Image (cartoon, rainbow, N blue to C red; front, side):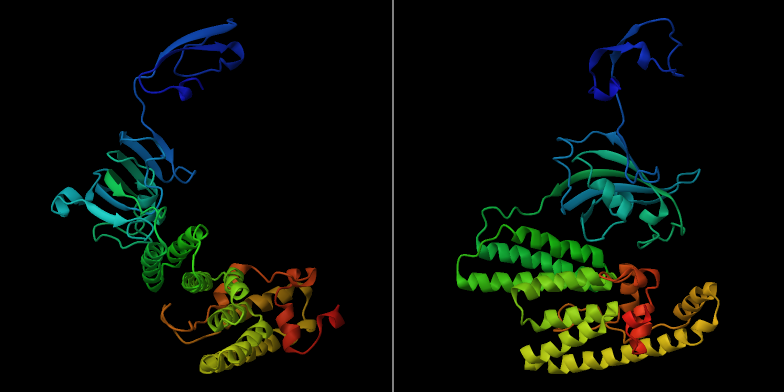
Length: 409
């Protein structure tokens, strides 16, 4: 405990009373003493950080960097330059890549927060100081199982990286920028987010949009024109966040993001469309129908998109009704334990299909079929009674059959 408070090269006397004189394999047995004084010099130590808390992703500092931890680390999204050597965790410690050898001696330059390197690699680099050298031991799920794997790295391989952080460039501080400069910086981040969205990196894209929205909390437009530009940009970012949540299967959060736009601009057709799609994916068909119909009222030019969405909604309702009738058929002829088996079989056998849509945030309205993902991720509808908590599919079954839930109860 005393050594844990010391710095490198420090000398100290640690006074330990008998209640803290616990047995140790590193020290001789000490008995029948009320207090022992230890003269300690901390010659050297290697910082070892358990990044996940389970011993699988370990960062060991081999050479100290410059600056103070963590203030001088690349905690925020930055442009980083590193040299690294990648090794397999086998007896030979086979090297599969070395920037000094395989990259003509040039360092790897990448932007953090964009999924350009394996997740475990980036997590550790963010906690390094400029000039620091660290040895990272990484499990496959944070290395190359979810990332483009080098040819010489087998699937499921544990790896080590010896990383040297040469330096990094912090993102521009918005303090002191005028309105147009702030909007220009916001647009750069938004474009990066759109690229990540199209690449299917929805979590990273969402983080980019949310970063700008946080910065917008400190922006105060000075003119009506600036206010309009600011509101339009903020609405667009909220809708992009909603699109990310929908792709990630989190329908309720997608709806909440759309509500932020509709609170500021109640006649926003695109927000109504996106919220309607989220409602439809969550199985709230009446709410979805209301939003699609409202689209036509607030913006006549959106009628083709609203009509197509209503047609898709009707098809999905029919599909749910068909599955509900099949699920409900003969239900009361079964024993109580057999009801769950019918539900499992039906979920496995039928899946609502939809047209494959490209990940495109530039389109006026973003269509997709994420109903199954939303139902899995949301874990049920909020605002339901205890009956539906016990039997989540009950609402759809009774609704499809035209039977009110109170009558059943």
